[in-house]
Amino acid sequence: MLDAYVIEEIKRREREQRRDDRPVIELPLPQPVHRPGADEPADRDDGRKDRGVVIIDLG
Image (tube, rainbow, N blue to C red; front, side, top):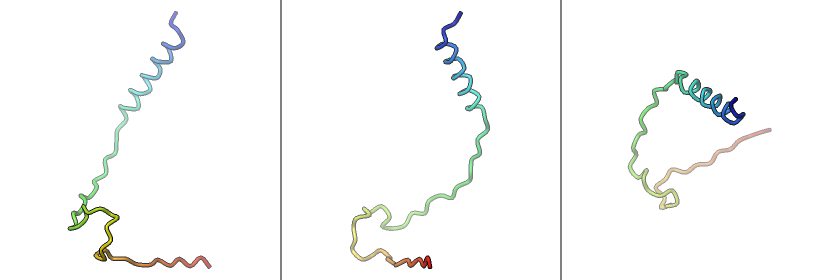
C-alpha cells in the first residue's frame, strides 16, 4: 500500500497537469509608446513635466 504522502503527491501532479492543459487566452496588447525623456528617473523635477490638479466633489 502507498503512503498517504505519495498518494497526495500523485493527485497534486495530476491537478497541475490538468491546469497546464487548459487553453489560455492571449490578448493583443498594444506596444508601449516610447516618449522622449521617459527613461529619466521619476524623482527628477526640472519643470518639464505637465502637472495638474484633480478635484473630486463628493457632495
